[in-house]
Image (tube, rainbow, N blue to C red; front, side):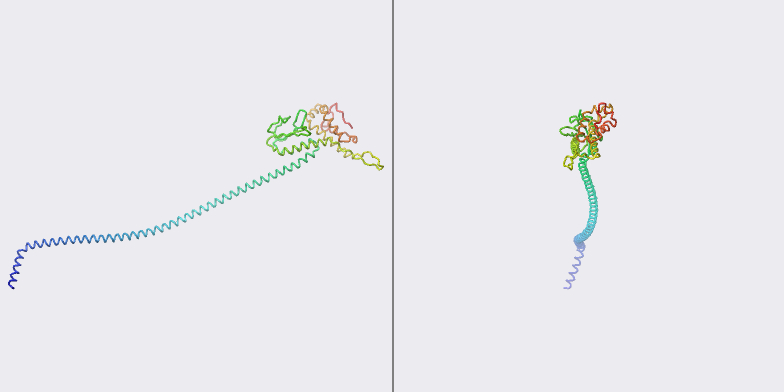
Length: 369
């Protein structure tokens, strides 16, 4: 058994020796294949491990990346939020400052505008008040003129004085004003005031339509007229012209109304006593006034004839009708029998003849007293 085992061992050794190169080669090949297979498996495992490692790294990188991104995003968001809040705060502050500035500017402009409006309104109200005050003063002045004017015209001692007072009263109400008196050939210019040209003779038909023209009619006869050029105020001119017409009529009636005779005083014996005359001073004053008014009226309405009569010394021949009518009125108003002087004659010499009796002419009859 032992031999057999030894023989077997040797045989095996010989076999192995004989087979050694082939087995070696085969073994090498197998080893090589095993090695290559192991290498391949190693490479595969390495590749797999590398891939796994790469994946792990990638996953880790992605996680880190995501984490980093999340942190960066969070940080950026926080920074953006801070910047946003800061920007919002700055914007709010700026907007607030702008709004405050704008509000202050608007408030200042509004205050300035309100102040300017108030100043303008105050000025307008003050101007309106001044205008109303001036208007009221003008109206009061006009009413005063109306009231005083009527009295002034009525108190005139002659028609010449009356017309002069009338011109003084109406002069403020027209650029130019003129008074015409009735003559045989129409209405003749008596006097004018202001800067305006007036014709020497006028009528209702010849006067400029742009002029103010007011005929003064007394007892259906035109005795005078008033004319004015633009600009003028028609209302006061109308009123005062009407006052002048009434004053002329009243003055004429006063001239033609006989003066009252002295009253009769009963005698102690119940018999009628002679009439008692007024005191000489009062009687002479009334006679002198009546003569002055009558002669002034003649001169007023006949200035051209008076001027020519003085030059030619024939006043009575030119104005005989007017002088005789005036004397008739004088006799009606005055008790000439109680007078020692002919005041009518004296006024003819003083007013018409300018103090020179010879200018009355050779055919003048002279004084009657």
